[in-house]
Image 1 (cartoon, helix red, strand yellow):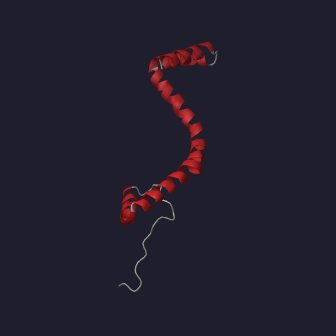
Image 2 (cartoon, helix red, strand yellow):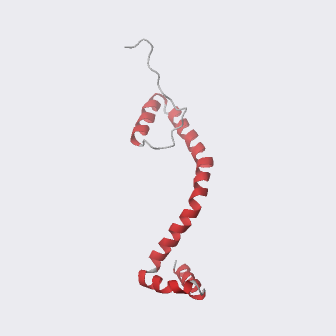
Image 3 (cartoon, one colour):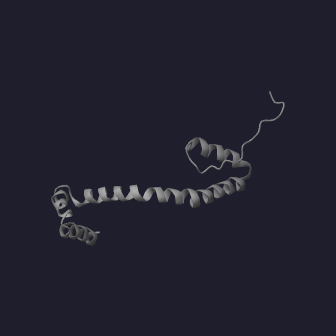
Length: 107
């Protein structure tokens, strides 16, 4: 981390337009500057990571979740409903998960 800090300061000091940021970095500290750079980087990288998550990770996690509910056997619907009530906005629960149907003719 110290080597990276030195590299950033040298890069800022050697670039004619970025050398004006040296007093800012000196006044507020390198950690705040690193946080601002990280926030900018996250804003650029996040859409790609979100596409990757939705295309690769989420389908695998949904199938693994459905398989876990299946292997729980009789406790599967209970575990599914408990998970759904504790994490209401979770995308992990697939649309085709177990949903018990009411008995016909039951009052």
